[in-house]
Every structure is written in structure tokens, then in C-alpha cells.
Amino acid sequence: MSATILVADDDRAIRTVLNQALARLGHDVRMTGNASTLWRWIADGDGDLVITDVIMPDENGLDLIPRIKKLRPDLRVIVMSAQNTLLTAVKATERGAFEYLPKPFDLRELISVVERALSAPLSAPTDEEVEDEQLPLIGRSPAMQEIYRSIARLMGTDLSVLITGESGTGKELVARALHDFGKRRSGPFVAINMAAIPRELIESELFGHERGAFTGAAQRSSGRFEQAKGGTLFLDEIGDMPFEAQTRLLRVLQEGEYTSVGGRAPIRADSRIIAATHRDLSQLIRQGVFREDLFYRLNVAPIRIPPLRERTADIPALVRHFASQAAKEGLPGKVLDEAAMERLRRYRWPGNVRELENLVRRLAALYSQEVIGVDVIEGELAAAPAEAPVSGETLSGEGLGAAVERHINEYFVAHKGAMPAAGLYDRILREIERPLIVATLVATRGNQIKAAYVLGLNRNTLRKKIRELDIPVVRGLK
Image (cartoon, rainbow, N blue to C red; front, side):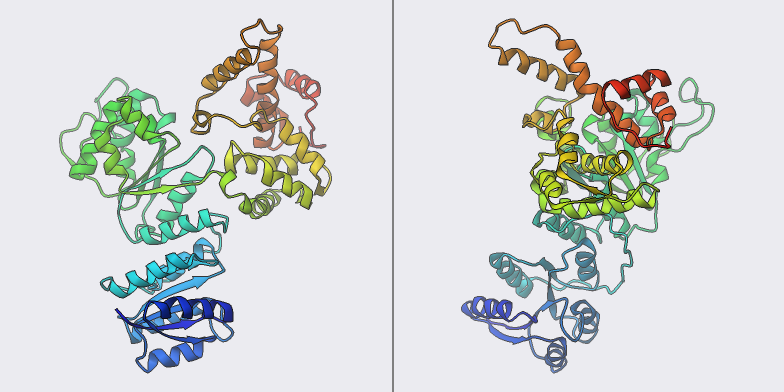
């Protein structure tokens, strides 16, 4: 179907490409490099579809959208922008844009969006403003752009979302963004980690319990479902949920109500469910430890968080962000030179964004120089035993015991069945001990008293190990 498409972009090359591509499809294309001409065309009633850039010489394209929707609510708007942050995607969607495309864009994808825009039924617009300069997610890589667009599409719904990704990728940040930019933002955000709750207490934690429901239940206690009323319930590490509790959760999702432990009266559930896992749920289903029907109830809208090694272009922005956060907490400000930054881009990052954050905090806490060079980075990364490529099972989040077992098996395989040299016990301990102590010192901001308490070590023992393992310390910190 032929249509008149209005294109506004101050980049002549982009206008030319769009003109050629859309004209080949039989559309009449009108192009301009400024917002005022675009608005004049719209006010005159011209055009069946608008494609507009955000930053133009005379006006921000996002500011045009509410005026367009007020004057011509049936006119669809596609927004393009090189300012490809989560906030841009959210603003475009909340102001009523049909779709947001980050630059550089895939021409085939844009054509597909144009076809959808010309044939899709109208949707109710909204001009509600989002004012949040503290973005919860950092990065402008194509992988992150897809996440921003998913959040923008889902924020106005109550659909269940399943977030998957390796440990340390920021699954809870995505869940919080869905809540903070969603229609339930005025309600509570309640999180529960299934892996951190004893199996026998899961149902009580989720659904609450009545007085006398079990030994020790001296009074009634509300569960996370009740606490999340009107808001969002985030079920982290859903793959570790006991099978019996999965059955009760499925009933809540199917029927919209639950009963507390020891209770009889049904309670209406009123919260959006967002679940997350680093585990392969399809494999758990095959093993018979995760319900397939529950998976489909949770996986209505899936979001995959890419590992950091798939978006290394975001590392400089993440480093600056974490260094700024560390400085706000009183740690010395640090800057990485280009060689050091390039070394970070080449690293595999098995611990993902969390590992990078810990590294930046460690650099701020333990090194005196203001500019960090590649030699320091090499030393820090050399202390991380996971620099070498690891198996997919490890990347999906195997436990420490399984990782050690795998490491030992590989050690014997490397010796081709021959008896290896003695000292494996001490070797494994050395590989674990140094990063364990360093990470604890960073988490306690160099406070050795707190670190010793957390580690369960005598303070003098900790000091001895710091000397033996050549762990740098900051002067003035205990």
C-alpha cells in the first residue's frame, strides 16, 4: 500500500538512504532537515507516517510527539536517535511514538517497522513524562539497545517477564527498570532470592503464615505477595525454587489468588511477576526439577541480558560510572589510560558487570596512582583464575564445588592419566584464597577488622595472609 512518509533528519546521507529505500517500495517520501518544516507539513494534514530524528537544529524531535498526538492522534511516529540510552527509548514510547530505533539502524528492520506502522491498529497514546537522570542501566551497544526497547514496550503492561542471563549481568537492574518506568511504579518493588531462602521456609516467605501454622509461628506474618500488593514481585533465581513451591506459584499465576500457610481464606494477588535466573530452565525441565507449565506462565515476555563479553563497547562507560560511584562514596577518583581500557575490552569477564564493578572499586581502594596503567590491570586480571576460556556450564552459573571438581578433572586430564606432581591441595587453596580476601577487602572498603569478621579469621591471621599473598592495602584504613 502506497503512503506518504514524512522524514525529518539533519543528516543528508540518512535522508538519501531512506528516500531511496522507501521510494523503491512505492511510497511518496518528503524529506526535511528541520523540525519546523516537519511540523508545517503535519499541521497542513500531510503524511501518513512520520520518521523523525531526535536532535535537530531547531527543536528536539521528542518534543514534537505530544503536539503531533494532540493535533493528529492517528498519525504514527517512528523515532530515530543516536542518543541511544534507556531514557531515550522510554521517552519516545511514553510520548506516543510507534517505535524507537537507535542509530545506526538496520535498514531492513526500519522497513519492517514502517510496514507494521502503516498496517497496525491504533493504540491509545500517552504523554506522561519520565524524569529520571539516574539511569539504572549503562551502555549503548546494540545488545543493550534491544533491552531498552524491550523495557519500553513492556513498561505499560502487566505481563509476566522472565529475565535470563549469567550471574553478574544485572538482571535485578532490568527488573527494577521495568518497575520504575512501568504503570505500577507507585507501588512497592519486593525482591526475594530463591537460592537464599531455606527450602522449608520458601512458602511462608512467599505467601505468609498464620499464627500457630507451625512450630515457632507465634504471630501472623505477611508474605512477599502481600507486601508487593499494587507493585512488582521480583522472584530472583527462580530456577532454585523447590518443586513443591512451584506448584503453589503456578496456582497463583493461573487463578490470581493464594492462601497463607495455615490459612483457609483465599487472598487476591495484585502484583506484577518478574522472574530471573542464570540457569537453563529448559534443561531443568528435562531433568524433572522445574515445571514446564510454570515456565510458560513466567516466560510470557522473555528478556535475555547479554554477558559483558558480548558488549565490550560498553566497558569504558561502565568504568566511568563505577569510578564516579566509588568517588561519591569517598574513595579516590581513578582514570584508566587507553592501554588499560583496551586490556579490559579483551578480557573475558566471567563475572560480568559485577566483576568489573568490583575491579573498579578495588582499583580505587588499593592503588595510590590517579591514572591506572595497563601493568596494574594485567596484575589484577592475572590474579583472576577464570581468565582462560571456561565451559558453557561454568558460564551458566555452576557452584564453587562443581567448579573445583571440574578444575581438578581438567588437571588430571592435562597429565594424560599420569600421576601429577604433589601439591594440588595447596594450589587450589592459593587460587581461591587471594581473590576471596581481595573481594572481601573491597566490599568492606579496606577495613581489615570487618573483613576478618566476615571471613571468620583472626585479625592477625588476615594481616599475615595479606603479606603472604602480596595484597596491596590503602594507608590509613584498618
